Image (tube, rainbow, N blue to C red; front, side, top):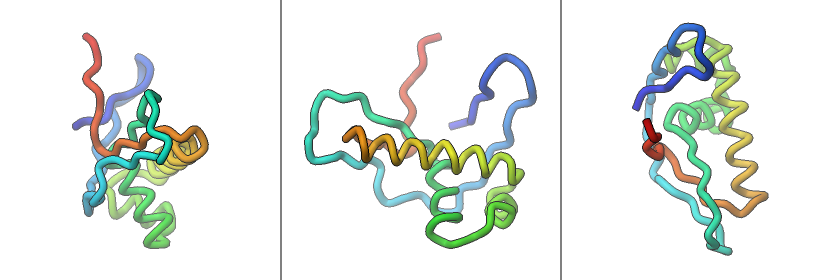
Length: 103
């Protein structure tokens, strides 16, 4: 799975290195309704592990994943928002799987 750039301009992002895949691929809250899942990619899960679990600074996580601190900051902000949204909205969190986009 390759990351896609957002918008029409700029360079394609560097694919971050993933040190360890999470055991879980999906987290489903108790009230399982017909709510759309929230998708978090492997790079977002990896940056959560490195920064929030392993306690690395963003610069250290960037070296570990082979990308810039700015990329780590964006991945971390996106991942935290998705996890928080999943918890507060009671929506399933799907890790590492992306829905196919219509072309």
